[in-house]
Image (tube, rainbow, N blue to C red; front, side, top):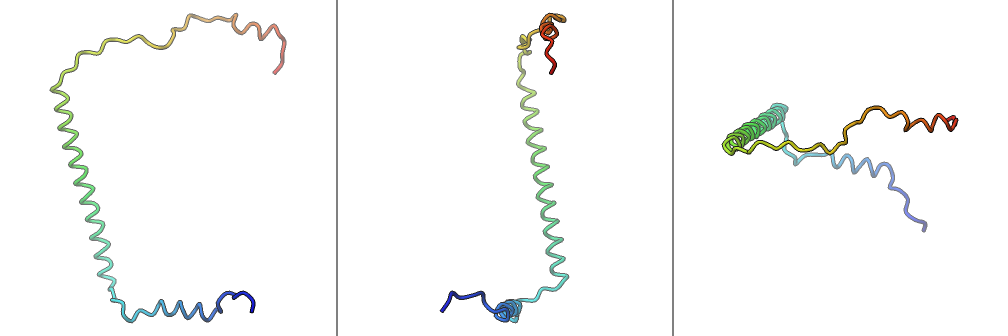
Length: 102
């Protein structure tokens, strides 16, 4: 015998109909499903509002605690960048002299 081929189409359709047969499954009404969805949305919004309020309180407490601790004024630091010293055209003059066309 050769290698087994794919199962016949009627076998696959029979399995699909067997999976769709839901005689032992609980039936859910449309109102119950809508209630679950609305309840889930309300619970999600309630959690988001609670997190927002708690984060605001924590931020407020940290801000008032940091205001009490006075920091000395920051000393002015030197800039790590070199100041420009005017235009220096001689830097690029050798490009004009070479006559190279790019």
